[in-house]
Length: 45
Image (cartoon, rainbow, N blue to C red; front, side):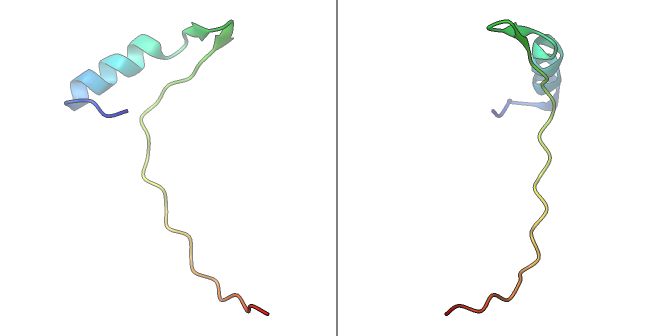
């Protein structure tokens, strides 16, 4: 999810982290960009 600014995002993380959904505790944190995978040469038959 995207928030309007960093403060709103941090407030959402703080408010939701550790809460329970259907009896299970959830962990909420800021998403990090994925690292690109190195291209591997694959031979196709």
